[in-house]
Image 1 (cartoon, rainbow, N blue to C red):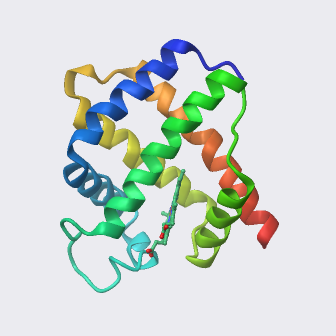
Image 2 (image 1 turned 180 degrees about the vertical axis):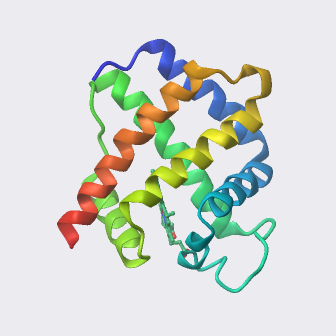
Image 3 (image 1 turned 90 degrees about the vertical axis):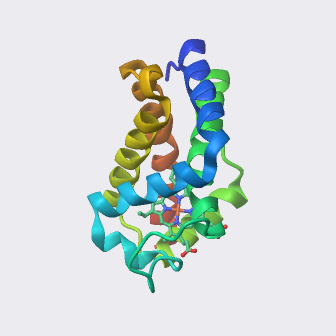
Length: 154
Ligand code: HEM
């Protein structure tokens, strides 16, 4: 895998921008997930009993932050080591949480699209295809590691 310094920098810089308004972007991220895949709603404990995406819900924010932050960390590892390194215990935990929640492979594409749309919203004119490419690549590698773990647990 070739992940360049430029790609790493783009991911880090854009995460710095989105990080400045977690409530706003985590809400946007989940609204996009539900717009793309309305049925995904019932998998999330914090969405199951509501009609709207709740504002300032800690669990919602935590999931959004995890997806962005772990993708950003993956970008750093891809550049430094040429591969994804997630601690075994973390990967096992991620595998079991998602398997138990009923998450399926196609959901990872939904979340990727929501992530891209959220970047577009947050970055405005700083958004471009290079930024999208860098995030997509890092996300794909992370998602692959989680999906592989989910299959092991099956
Ligand atoms: C839970 C990360 C993709 C659905 C979690 C948790 C983490 C996490 C860390 C545990 C949260 C906690 O500590 O309670 C990630 C990462 C992803 C990813 C890094 C991709 C790179 C997805 C996808 C879906 C999904 C694609 C499905 C659309 C869920 C659900 C839970 C969960 C339903 C349980 C949350 C709850 O009900 O409280 N995820 N996730 N995740 N994730 Fe993901």
